[in-house]
Picture (tube, rainbow, N blue to C red):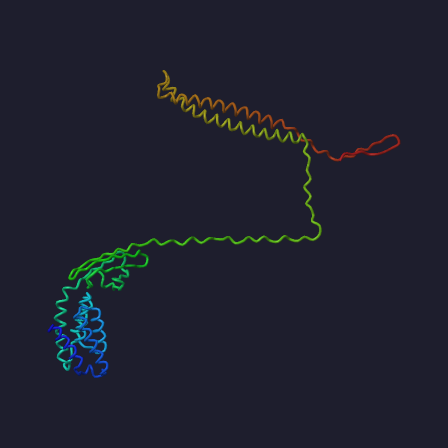
Length: 347
């Protein structure tokens, strides 16, 4: 109780002491700050750390004093905000006090330096690593983390924290970790690329086909006259058919002669070998070749027969074509009879 009373007395004395820092502070503001400091100290003693932090922060915004910041740092420690408390303690030590400041201010600075030294080992740390991309946006409890702070120890308050990472073209990832006082935890997040849906291919629409309007006609439309049909005599038709059959017969005869010559040549080629091998009976391995020889011989005979018949038939048909009747020349013959004289002619 003596220590708490001395702290309270230190706060009130600091607010009542005149200094250059308080020169522009009105009496009403000083009284308000004193009331807020008293409420903050009372809440701190009751372990109502939320109220204590609020009152000390308000009082410090009216009169900036190391004694009020010291009360705020202690309230932050009570709330478990060790990182914020550590920074408040360090700020008191960095700012220091002027030579003309009250002695209580210098005592507050020295107290802050001692308390931050004992607080430092209690502050947890976390190492956050992100794999997959170097452009990830990372947050811890929705507070952004700079890229330079990834992969190294980062102070954090005790308790459970949610770490998220996201990047364009990658599926987001998140993980939670619970930190104890003085412990160091690690979190590794891996971002995996997501497949980008390809846009559908554009539909090509063919331009409409314009049909030209019909050309107007003037007057009656002339109907085309079909060409005259020239009658074909039976003799001409018969000669044309016979001529066609003659050429077809010659063609078939030519194919038959070629087939006979080719298969005959192949058969002659096999005959020499078989004559030697089969002089005293064909061995088993030559039976297939002997059968092929006989087949080629038969095909050659048939080819020559068909070729001869076709050639002969074609020649006969072409040679026996009916001769064309020569066109009669126009002529005139005189006719003399009893009592008349005339002429007759053919045209």
